[in-house]
Length: 540
Ligand code: AMP
Picture 1 (tube, rainbow, N blue to C red):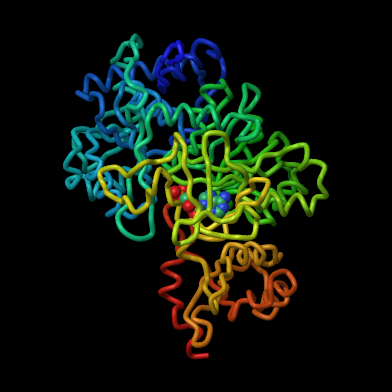
Picture 2 (picture 1 turned 135 degrees about the vertical axis):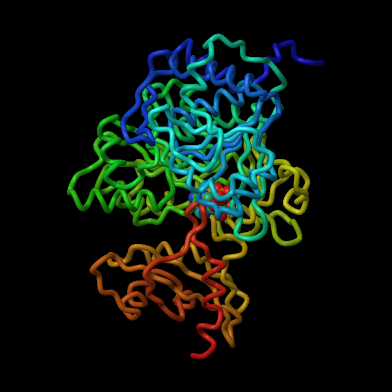
C-alpha cells in the first residue's frame, strides 16, 4: 500500500522562494571582485535571480543546457547557482586554478553554451576563446564601468543583462531528478571527470548539512564560505544558508589572512568553511597582529586532513571548535562530520584532540563501509583499514559522459581512500590508496606522519611520500617547508618525531624545500614529488 502524501519535488528554486518569503531581510554580503563591499538581502537576490532567468531565456538557454562559470565566491555567482538551476538549466562551475588545457577540455566536454566569467579570469580566457567551440556567449560579471578591453569580441555585461529584464518570472516545476549543477574532479591522472548533481541531491544534502550533528547552520549563523564555489559548490553552504536564512558572507577573490580577518570581524562571522592551508594562513596572520577571532564559534575543515596543530591552535588561541569533515566532489561533498557533542566537551583536551583528528561520523542519509581488495567488509574496530565505500542519495552514481563503472560497485562508490571505522562510528582516513607507503608489506600513513611533523614549531608545511628502497620496497621521506627565519635540521625533525610515531615509521630522509606543489584544489601533488624523488634513497 502506498502512502497518501503529496509528492512535491525538491527543487532549488524552492529554497530561494522560501528564503524570499520567510527571511526577506536577511543579508548577503560580498567583497566584490571590483574591491568594494556589496550588501543586499534574500529578497533582492531572489528578484535578481528571476531577472537572470529571464535573461538566460532571452539568450536562448533552455532546460538541460550547461552554463559555465569561472568565478569567485560572490553574490553574482550565488545568483547563477539559483537562477540557472531554477530555470532547469545546469550551472557548471569551472575551477580556474586548473591548467588552461584542462579548462579548455572541461568546457568543451560539458558543451557549455554560455560562460559567466569574473574580471580576474578574462586574461586566462583570451588565449583559448577561439577553441571554446560550444560557447555562444561570454558574460563578464561586472557593471558597464568595469567592462574590460579584451581581444574577445562581443562580451556581454552582467549588470546590463539583468537591467534589461523584468523581475517577474514563474519558476518552472519539473522532476527533482533533473540535473542542477556540474563540477569536475581535479584528479592527478587522466582527464577531469564530471559529477552531475540533481535538484533532489542538492536539497537533501543542504537539509542534512544544517543538522546540529553536521554543520549546525541556522538562522543565527553567519556563514563565510572560503572554500570556493567552483569546488563542490562551496561544500553546498550557499544552499544550506538559503534554506535556513543564515546570513552569508562571500570573500570574493581575497582570501589572505588580513582580508579574511577584516571581513570576519566586520560581519561577525560565526561559521567559516575552508581547507587547512587557508586556516594556516589566517592563524599565522592572527599571531602576527596578536589578535583573536572573536565572533567565530566553529570552523569547518575538509578537503585534506586537519592537522592536530590546527585543531589545537583554533581551540587554545581563539576558543574555536574545529569541525573536521570528509567528503569528495562525488559526495556533494559531505560524507562524514566530526561535530561537537556533550561527550566531547567533557573529555580531557588531549583526548578530544585525538578524536577531532578523525574525519567524523556519517551524517544521516549516507552509509559507509570499509572492504578489502576482494570486496569483503572489514571490522568496524578502529584498527582494520581498507577501501572506503559510500552510498546515499547525494553520492554520484556515475560520471558525466564517461564510463568509469570500476568505481561503482553494487550501489556503492569506491572513494579511493583507505580508512578505519571505530565501533562508535568514527571514520579515520589513513591515506589515499595511491599515497599509502608500503614498507616491507606493512602500511605507513603518509597523512599521519605529515600531521605529526607539522606540530614542530619551526615547520610551515610537510609532505610525506613513499620512494623506492632496495630492502623494504618503499620507505617514507619527509619534505619540509620551514617557517620564515627558522632553522631546523634533519636531526631535529627525527628527534621530534621519535616517540610520537612507531619507530619503523620514522622517515629515512628529511628534505628541506622552498615550496611544495599543489593541485587546483590545494592538495599536495604527491605524484609529481614521487617522480622527482623516486631514486632518492637508492644511492644511499
Ligand atoms: P575532492 O574531490 O577534490 O574534494 O577531493 C576529495 C578527496 O580529498 C578525498 O577522497 C580525500 O582523499 C581528501 N579529503 C577530503 N577531506 C579530507 C579530510 N578531512 N581528511 C583527509 N582527506 C580528505
